[in-house]
Image (cartoon, rainbow over all chains, first blue to last red; front, side, top):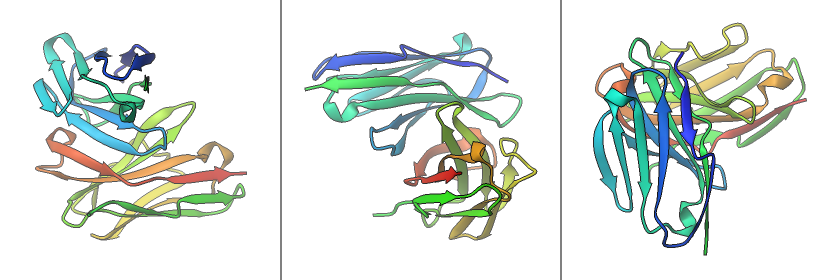
Length: 109
Length: 119
């Protein structure tokens, strides 16, 4: 199966700062998604982004499929952005969705 | 405010007992997912259904786990017999896919999860 590597594993920011989270895949994927899990455990699907760029408010994501990576940008971070950010992808040859280990983000007031 | 609901929210049981977790997807969604999250394995996709038919359950231990959708408003995940290593948070999610491929889903909406502890 594919390997999914996320970086950095931990990130601490002051409110208002910008950040970039990265997700690398060991092989081509045909379904790339970003998720946020808040400190209370609730999961939210942020983006489905197999290629290109998408934006949703202060969050945006870019996937460069040919180079097998995706980036999640958080601008003007807020304390509510704290939590764990996961990326996941499915192999082009199958439907198995593999998750990264996540980036733990802490935004301090 | 449409949302995915899951019951029970917490379950403590003894090894060997049957466990049934239930999920009510958002009305109108045609695809339902079951995930498991543990400290050791992280997040895993166990199975998913489209229009109530199982499309992929390759992530699920076949000998003890089973997933069904008796109707469009109910998805169930059963473990029989349960083992301590099944202790985890189980999430259900629903969404709309254009076809049966994971690549066609736009957004999935998660339930609050069922925290299962098997003693």
